[in-house]
Image 1 (cartoon, rainbow, N blue to C red):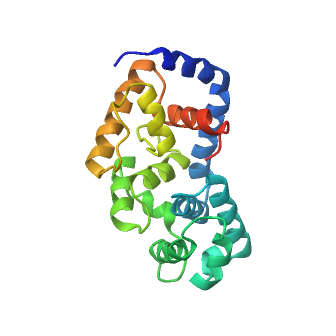
Image 2: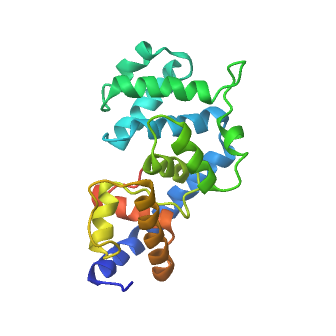
Length: 218
């Protein structure tokens, strides 16, 4: 792959925000290193809420659910009102309750962080999430893993990122649908590109998101 004109525009912006991006990624790593099982559960729950919804709205909902206690012990009916700022609130309330069942032991203790510590690689974690957690596909699973410090080799292929991958000539077109096989193929192309330009995948993800939103968030 060759660097094109758009890359040099992006690289210039990257140099101006690189410290902020690296600070944010360090905060993600600290979430895992210093966070509790409940903290990691909140990050996983956040990514269940993000599909077709604004990230800040999803995090606002999770923060309010956590503060109220409903995220940890509320019924679907008690959770739904907090999700009015995200799409598909009834379905997502059900998914949060199913997730809670998966991430607690028989005594009701959260085991999220302890559970994921049993995997050897982020790729194994992602495969398990996609196969076992309702409401999460490769994009959402990669998003969660990036947000807890495991995103160095993973791509979060949402429409904003794909648009920029097209502009960078990493892909030839934006696919209408992305199968798991195609997701991994595009991710592999991005991984090779990142090696060539010497920008890690988690850095370039936040950079391309910044280009769209002018914000370095989650």
